[in-house]
Length: 264
Length: 338
Ligand SMILES: Nc1ncnc2c1ncn2[C@@H]1O[C@H](COP(=O)(O)OP(=O)(O)OP(=O)(O)O)[C@@H](O)[C@H]1O
Ligand SMILES: [Mg+2]
Image 1 (cartoon, rainbow over the protein chains, first blue to last red):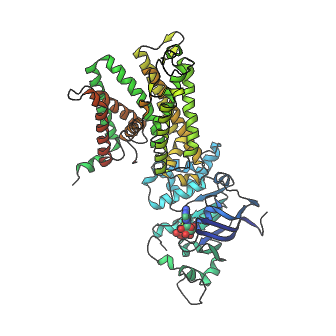
Image 2: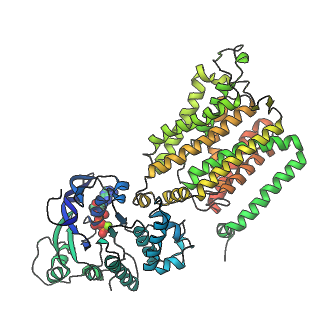
Image 3: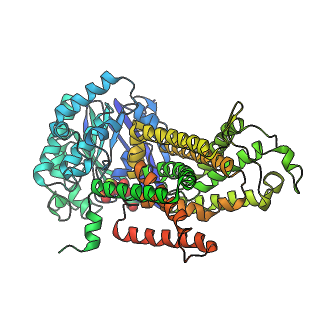
């Protein structure tokens, strides 16, 4: 049984080591049914590793993941059957397959054809663009469309819990807004529990119920968007100040910092 | 301004496919008309065997993205199984280093040859599955060498360098396919079956998973696909087809020795698959045909002494491969680059 409260997914003291690198060092976090939770933190903080640890894709050396009261064992194909889907960082659509075939990959061995069609329809309702281009190769899509495809492909598994890793990375500002809006829609309309890793702090705090801040493989803060906006925790973490210094700083440094990060 | 190499690289696939098809088929027909029926039958039989090998290897290399240079090992296992189980026992006893052969008919030995190639592939594959990319190339290279040294050194079973004689032709009851034309028809039927199976595989959802594996193994694992199982399945299937080609080859030549299964043959095979194009069955058929024409064709070059034919075809194939990698890295009608 889980150690505490009403969490549907719970990580207790998870440690992930890649050789000498301690990607996660005693991370505990939980997410309630129907909630949308953000995981934030600087590059290399271990955000992707949290999601991979849940999916059985990271070398977990200590701690456990509990899902609906039972412990999740390590094999990814079993975890997928539990209703957890992962949309990895960087879209990773299959460019030599058509859009329809890409979507099919999300639930290929579902025997029930009617159910397959139902899922396809609900994904298309959410992302009409995927229907228009269904016979095109995924390589012919724009970055934003590929991201929609990646999320749609994840939804084909009809997940109870959807894990999104940086869905707005490298997208134009206008598309970023659209992606966030879709994520909110998935949470509201499909009642899917969502854990989203994001660098676009302003954007993601607008759509989640709660957020965790990670730094150097540890959870350094947890709270509602409002409470996070009130503190300087993000500034401190992103500027590498381990101890809060109580000075006013830009709370969304990365939203403005150059490179591929884009803010509103 | 566009240069010639650029034009070649960007030439649309469909166009090249048409030109290559017309060219290779035209060449084949012209050659056959010139040389007559006997030659045509031999050429087509050699083609059928190489085509089975090329198409089945493309399943692994082209469609799944596992660059294996060990395919010839499975070809050898098929050939040796056929030879050992089916070669004429009474003939063999007269010879030095006789091996005990049960003298089975072709069709009794064939399923064993195919199954054994598959079984060895399964064992090897379970080990190989841990290896990826560059390491996979090296390990499959090692497999080809080990297989060859088995054929050469396991004399109690293979007669080593002496080779095995008197391997029978297929027989349906009392009807023995010892005519060259009958055998050719049989070989073409086998090729057609292999092409059909490969086509069914690559157009099915199983085939789409293979494509996804080739593109991004980790991304497909995220959806709960056990990538290793898929790779293993296609690897074993492909090895079984190579085993079939080996059995056909042994029966056709009626004599085999380890020299037919050297690593170089594997390299030629890879060259055919890449020249024809990755992830295209038609490309592999064209590649095999072009290769056979080249090989057989060189026999007729007046200035080329017979003993250099072997080397010459390697040189030509090597040069073609280098040129193609430079100017058209996706192969003639291939869908993507190596
Ligand atoms: N496969 C791996 N092998 C070795 N080290 C790894 C591996 N994956 C991640 N790491 C290390 O683990 C740490 C956390 O990585 P992770 O990908 O979780 O960071 P992240 O917070 O997602 O960063 P980003 O914002 O850049 O995506 C990093 O120091 C990284 O170098
Ligand atoms: Mg990450």
